[in-house]
Length: 480
Image (tube, rainbow, N blue to C red):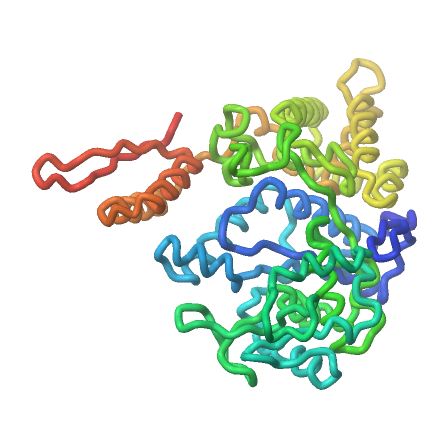
């Protein structure tokens, strides 16, 4: 154990910073809500990916990599998915496979370690049905008009996580106003599916699960009835996490689902809420592969460092200036490593600086940990005197930065290697063909979507017509 400092985490459930004590130190368990794969992940989605990747790395450092299990799910059945697939005139499977592939590429570019398990909702329908049956048997759910709903009044302390006034919770639940509901706040566990919608046989007819139920089933399957930490964005506290707690506790009869609930703060873009109507909606994929934000594509490590400027629970403003500063910082640090002849092999056994470890163990105080990295970098600057000390500091810098998922590239290649803009020719040809087919059928929305997707990949299109047949044609080239 290289980190002996007690780990303190802010628990949304208790509203206090608590010393983290795992249920079983030999089996530390972490669950984080993953993507709903109907569209590319936006930069706000990147924040929990990075925050909980740092937590995962710290837990592995503290308890040993073999003693930590990280589960991050993939939601691949959802009404948004159904709507988007219908809009694009493709199958739901085609949509979710394509979107998940891009998500995995994006998250890898951010230097996030792969979770130990990435369960898909559609592979856990049997587990969801089993939880519903338990809830009905325990008097916490009821079937009505082809639906099954959770009976909120049956749980006396419902709302303990969000601590919202009753009127606010009722307003949030009114999204599902329906005559078959006993109470205004009751929420759907199972709902019937039309022929055109995905569905599975169940005791209540052919249907599909409610969104909240999916995470309860996947966390239970892979982490058990109770586990250590549940994470996600602050926007998930109500109703998603509140309802997860209700389902899991009432199904299995425990006082808690997860001992610690952690939530990262919101993200704005250049001082404003991110919105497609404001034109400031930007995806991770666009940042990595297009010049939409700041006139250039950015390396994933730059995005990662820029996301570490604020404490994870505080709001963060995503700006071009922050990216530029992050890029300069990384270039300086890599230059120091090159000058000192330090790489991951030479720094593998370097000690972890105590002040750095204490900062991370203080509720993931990454900004304070970053200040320690800057101090190490200053001491590692090449100088004529005391070169051995400077090299030792460079090794400590790399060792600590790696714990944050930084400086994992080859120092010798950093300045020469820009963002990854190479394209998969077969994939481009496939997308160009799909776009041509959309143009021929006058499906202009799909044609525009594919054009934008190709632009994000750094591909320029030139539309024309075949001089003989008059059929639409498209030539393409890699921009730049």
